[in-house]
Image 1 (spheres, helix red, strand yellow):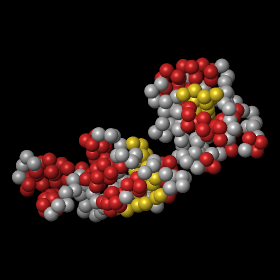
Image 2 (cartoon, rainbow, N blue to C red; image 1 turned 135 degrees about the horizontal axis):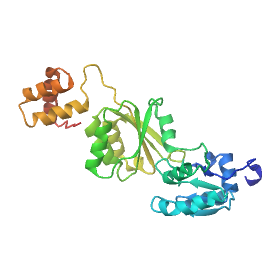
Image 3 (cartoon, rainbow, N blue to C red; image 1 turned 135 degrees about the vertical axis):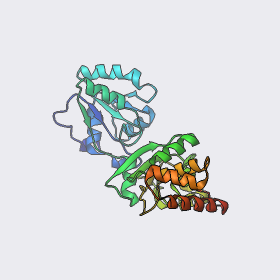
Image 4 (spheres, rainbow, N blue to C red; image 1 turned 90 degrees about the horizontal axis):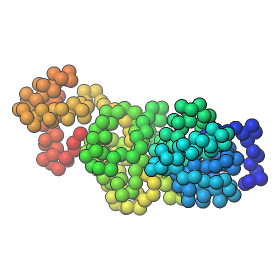
Length: 297
């Protein structure tokens, strides 16, 4: 591989943002390998993982560790090197740096000091999952990891419940079932969700279903949630005369303090919807709860 890669002509001093494979090492680009070989040093999120990659391609560039806990302390040293005319490559554990990984503060500092930043294209788990999901990809939101705590996770999902664009989340095996349960609670049973895991690796799988069915599917076999996970969620697409989760939440809050008919009148006045629709939806939800279909928004 080393002999196949010519040096980049007119290689300049800069901070290079270098994506690395998310699994399959063949996904690295010739340009990325050339940069990693020619820079003076590499700032890596985990030097041990990056060294495995470098050793595989016989690259011996020196490494500095740069992660979320030491980024602020490392920036002055790295900036000093760049100002002296040296070149640095920024890499994360896998995929494109800065996408849910450290490096933002370093890039921001470079931009403020007019130090050249050269981003390279390459692997990204979020985009890979989106492309294979079958969900609309012309407009989407990347949300990274949801909060660890249940209440905060519910609050974040509620904030996103009316988002019409496709949503992309990262998740981990020990939280994914709780995440799907919370999505059922907030989005309802029928919101379509794609679970993509171990992308580009030997056990890669992409499976989509209404989130209620998806939850049942993963609970039947815990191997289905092993590895690194991306969730791609269909955006909210309200049907004609369908009430949004936000309006229904207000209706529930009002109904907890007022007679249901009075609550429906007030909620209808606030949002400009028919009070009869609110009243009917509220009563239907109560009946579903009695029948064991407890879905909240």
